[in-house]
Amino acid sequence: DEAPAAGAARLAATEQDLPTHPAFATMLRKQARMRREYMQKRAADAKEASTADRKRKLRTAVDEGRTVPTELRGEADALLAEMELNGAPGPSSSTPDLDSEYASAGVADPRILLTTSHDPSSRLVQFLKEMKLVFPNTSRMNRGGHTVKQIVETCRADGFTDLVVLQEHRGVPDGLVVSHMPHGPTAYFGLANVTMRHDIEGATNMSEAYPHLVIDNLTSKVGARVATILKHLFPVPKPDSKRVVSLVNRADLLSFRHHVYAREKADVHLYEVGPRFDLRLYQIKLGTIDQEEVENEWVLRPYMNTASKRRAL
Image (cartoon, rainbow, N blue to C red; front, side, top):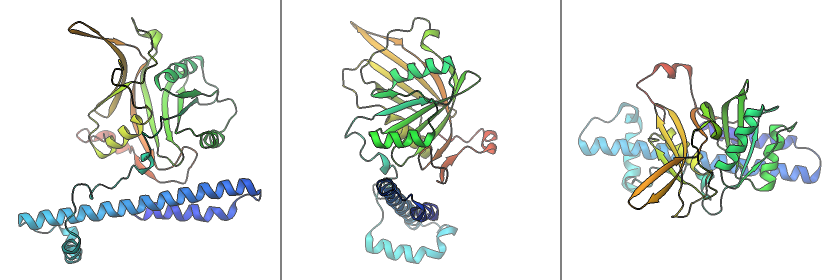
């Protein structure tokens, strides 16, 4: 609960070092104020969720006649008194809107800026062109000599909702970063098994209709967070759309598949469009991609690779 508040305090301190130009200083003060308000709201939501969870555990122990959990014994009396005054927390009050950065999603279609790392290879440029067709309402930007901070400022000024950056290693696409504007979060994925459209035998033409989403087996808290980040890259489709994008989780490897379907009398035929690739999440941080001081919401640690029975998503 203290980390978001500490981040908000650091942001408040940075306001004293703003440039002297009036217009630029005003813009940065506004961004710092909005970021501080968001961090304060997130800290309050996290504190409320923690309190509701402790009340629920205590209520369950009392109702079932079990011993009060050790971690709650010191505050059991205070929690019981508060529960008698306010009532036991219900299902809705125990899950505050921690995804408040997506609270306005659905009001307007997302706008995505798509770019690459510096000096992209021809294969990464080809992958960039194909990914532009995957995400509706996407603008492609040649990276050139632009810094990450300049690109983020462009996104905020032009009203983009998300920034997607494709990365590579020795000509092979190996990374995808999704940064939500204007305050985050930012999700970092590793890319594997990338297959371009022209490498898929019998790949059909790309439809420009908004796709339906099939999200499978993202059941944990981190998995729900990843689903929220990825699904808001796509606008709401029409009911008769015949385009389908699938995100299927198997052992923390998220498989991306892209199809269209056609009905022929009683039969339904599925045709792959491409591209296809696998995603592996390794970090979620609460700020945008250009912010290094923000806290991590989730990070893949080295020892997690040995915990074969534990899955993050």
